[in-house]
Structure formats: structure tokens, C-alpha cells
Image (cartoon, rainbow, N blue to C red):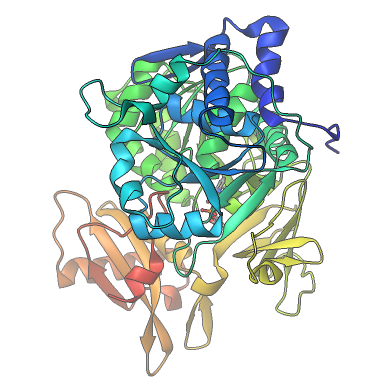
Length: 510
Ligand code: 3UK
């Protein structure tokens, strides 16, 4: 059981404590030519706290929209908002003006801290508060210098006290990536931030002060906020924050910085595995995959290429971070893992009753963090008697391992059979010609739905009816033949979100 005092500021715990305990000279953050120790990061954070509470006129409880690619300055801005007792509303770099406007309205945003490079969509957004300040303004940029965070910071003292917040004061409103429908704001407390830092990193990742974290998820996505900022700071480690990473440039960066822990999504690992032999990845000790199901074929390719056993973990914006995972000897390929200490999980039937091993049903989880939608009726669909229904179809085995099958809404029902798209994808990914694939149900008069595979071929392979037939036969050899894709479409790329998730609804509508 995690116990925290009633008064708690998460940044005081993960940053200020490190400096107070004499670890101020240790490396905290790197990226874009910057290299900050814990003490230097604290000074940056404190100057921003003073800007927020001084010239920006904010008072504890105000909501501050944050917008920027991964960068040490973006990290400092997030930490400052929390330390000042304000509420951070991070937004994904690719969001457009209209979507930002919806978020500003829904979260009642009172101030904006935005990277200068991403200013356009903010400037065009409706509902923008007057108090907008730009950070990382290039020296040659024209425009009002009074709205540059750097200039405002220079006029402020480099120390500030953490706001005396309650453990259950809201510090973060994170919006779901929302493949369809209106984005939902999920609210999290200061103690939730500490809870995720004291669960996955401690029990599964087992990381320490000598680790160097690296990876792709944006800080605006809770996977990245935890994995690339909160977790490293909590254990006294360091993180490299880089923007616009590709599989190739991430491999280069791991080599260059000698990173020890990598966080990214399954598709990245699959592409990195193919290029890994060209790089010296000897520094890397652990790799974490989340965001969508990890195909066994990808796990094997990565292990073959690097010798590392992938740590898969399912998390959700609603739960703040990962709640089922496994590492080391506890890994069972094909399974996500077991509930991490502090969390419980079970599988429910359509009536909400728990089912035993071997039966697919709706995943329900309970733990120190949980879903609190901001003013949204969908709260009652997600939380049932204190259990969170993540929308995932899962199956448990007799040893308590949890196996992901599909999103509940994505289960393909064809001629009375339930078929999980990811299982067919996993089979296809084993074929040497397949780079990426996405399997969905296509409406069919006779069967209700038929299994349709959207396939991206590797360089050197050409789409043809013969190739399609070959892939169909290949699937039939590996899994029950009724699951084979009756329809095959070749594409040059698959539609994905900024977080690496396949946008199945787009495949269904093409
Ligand atoms: C799916 C997975 C199978 C699953 C997230 C780690 O992805 C995150 O949050 P989102 O709100 O999406 C949540 C949904 O994504 N999913 C995530 N991880 C896995 N499915 N295996 C996995 N390992 O459908 C889940 O309900 O975008 C992941 C940490 C923080 C996060 N917010």
C-alpha cells in the first residue's frame, strides 16, 4: 500500500528533495545542446514558477496549457506548473487550432506556455487566454520580447518554494488521444503522479540513479511524461529529451548518449530491430513497449537483434500510466504480464461478472490511480464499482498472466466466429515480406464481417494477387484457418496517431 502525507507537492518530492539531499550536481536532463544537473533544472523550474505567479498573474488552481515538442525546456515548464500549484494541460504537438480551442474551452485554460516553433496553431485557436508566453524563441525571431519566457525568466529570482498543495489536489488534466469523438480530459492528483513513480519503475523496471532514459513518446502523452521525465527524476536518474525521432535517429541517439533505458511503441521497435546491427547498442539494458499490443514477432525480432527481453506494459491516459506488465524471468511471450504491485485486474463477462482463465472478456483494473473524466458522462461507462473498464478484451491464464486480444469494439465477428485482429497481424508479421500490417473487420452481407488485412510490404517485395495468396496460405499454416484474411489490401503506409497507435477506424472506412 502506498501512503502519502495529506499535504504533498509532487515536484517537491521528485526534484527539490534530490537537491536538498545533496544530489544537485547529478545530471538530470539533456537534449538540444542542453545538459542540466538537478540543481540547474531546479533553478530553471523556479524561475518559471516565479514568472507564472508574478508577471503572468496566475494563482494556484489555474489551468495552464502546455505545448511543445520533447525538450528540456518543455520539461521545466511542466514541472514549474505543478510546483506552482497550477494545473498542467499538456497538448500533443500535432493538434490543430480547432482541437486546441476545444481543449482550452473544456479545461478553462487561463494561461499558455507554448514553444515558439508551434505558435501558429495556438495563435489561430479560439478561446485563447490573453496570457500566452512563448519559450525557446530563436534569437532572430521578431515579435514582442515581453512575451518571451526567456526574457521574463531573466528578471526573476532562481528560487521558489513549492506550493503547499494537498495530495489530492488536481495537478494534471491529460486529454485522451481520442481516435473518435470529443477528447476527454482525465484529471490526476499530486499523489497519482507519485503513485505511478512508485509502481512501474520500482517493481518492474527496477531502474536506478545511473540510468539514462531515452525514447519517443511526447511529454504531452502520459506514457512519455512518466517514462521520460517523472520516472527518471524520481529515481535520481537522467533523461535525454529529443524531438522528431525516427527509428534510425533513435538508434543513433541511444549509441551517442549511451542510453540505458528506452521507451517507445511496438512499431518503432520493429523498425529499429531491422537496423540494430548497424549500431553499438551495448549501453542499452532495458526496453519498454507500450501504446498498443506488442506482437510476438516484434518481441522476437528485437530480442534477436539486441539480446534484450522487451518489457511490455499496458497503460492508459485514464489510469495515468502502466498497470499490467512483466520483466525479466516473469515474461511470458504473448502475454502483457500481471497486474503490477498495487494494482488488481480481472476479466468480466458482458454482465459484469468475473470470468475464469481461458475466457475472453472485458478488462477491469483497480489501483492507486484511476479514471476521473472532467465533466463527462462517459465516466459511468469507464468506472464500475471502483473498477476501471479500459475498453480492452483480455484473457487470463491459470497462472494469472493477462493476454491482450483486441480493443473491445475491434473484435471481428465473422460467420459467428470471434476473431481478434492483432492475432492475425502477429501471424502476418512473421512473413519475411511484411513490414507492417493492420487487420480489421470489413462489412460483408453473407458473413457479417470478413477479416481484411491492410499490408505494407518491405522494400524489394511487390503487391500482386500471387503475393496475397501466399500471405493467406501463410496465415492458415500458423493459426486456425477460419481466421485467415479473406481480403488483402496493399498500402504504402498505415494511418497512425502521434503515439504510434494504428487508426483502425481509418482502415475500416477506406
Ligand atoms: C492500448 C495497449 C495492448 C489499450 C498509455 C502506457 O497507451 C496509453 O494510453 P492511451 O490512453 O491508450 C490506452 C489504450 O491503449 N494499449 C496501451 N498499451 C498497450 N494494448 N498492449 C499494450 N502494451 O487499448 C489501452 O486501453 O493512449 C500507455 C502508459 C501511459 C499511457 N497513457
